[in-house]
Image (cartoon, rainbow, N blue to C red):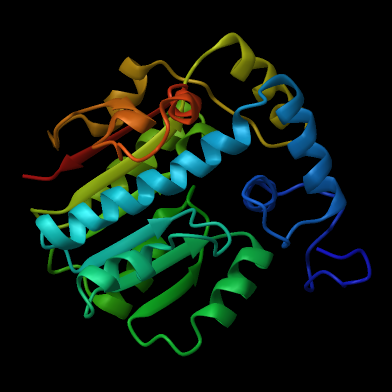
Length: 263
């Protein structure tokens, strides 16, 4: 974001935002100097981080195509959606299923402002502001917008690692308890490596705690759900796109993902 552009009301450009750092790594322009500084500091210890972010978007595309097409899901709830970028959920889902309804949820004012501007003319797509530490009001608004009487695909991509264990598990339980049978939970989560521990230190210093978890601990978020093959695996191993070069795919191995279906 150009330095002469004023931030939206209530946004402090000197405080980095997860959504805007992610936008910076993906080559976006909706970020401030503080976001770029944090992104560069993290990238200095984990050079693959921008590529990991890119692979997370590729995973999003693959899983939404599976859910909207093969699994027949027509409602999507994207929690911690971040800034609109490539392969947005509604774009992918509505290509496979034009009537698909999508609700984006975030608490970043910049992300919300851009999402609302992008989606102003999109009838089947909605934007909700909310705090994932308190999911009940979000669920009530989502129910009012699209209804929770039919299966929903709940997307929690690259956001659970910013929540402590108790809060993260409570949020997942609360959300999935509100979903009907046949709904899906999709998660992606950075793993636990020495390099990523150093990167997590930068997030913690900025006031945004990052919790690294092993694949076994990440899999616990999907307890009680029927895992969709190939299960809980590295990001690039979930129904991989063989057109992605093997060298580039290595950057996705430090992130874990999984998809579960509520019975």
